[in-house]
Image 1 (spheres, rainbow, N blue to C red):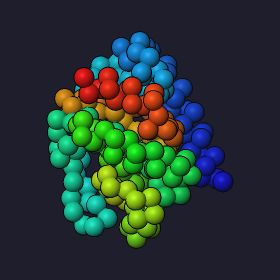
Image 2: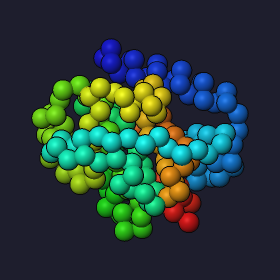
Image 3: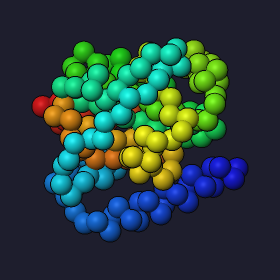
Image 4: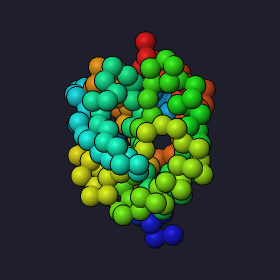
Length: 181
């Protein structure tokens, strides 16, 4: 309960800070508005990182160069995070052939086995990475969970979304269609 309340308060505060930043080109697009995307004032390269998978492999943002990436930050204790995992998997299955990658970064500390259980339970086939020291989370200024970043095929940040979404919805597919083309 306390963690959920923290999550909600953090999202609200983060949203207020970001909304005060002013409008940008993505807000003019129905596809971005339909999913609640907040876009940056200026597009810049997404911060690169390299993290371990639960199986001990190392992956970084460079592994997805030239693809549109949904970069999702989550944790096993976050109920809204768990709720959106199945729709993220369906989005991945539907749009991976078109060049869309889903990458989920867990900020759990020392819960590799629990994360493996989630991967199995939710039949996740997209990459799940571990950020137990939360260095990548800090580099992306994550204040609440779940938070997702949209990264274009050019490697630039296109926007972020605070809170859970139905990633396989019509609105989401419209959003990714805009990012792909």
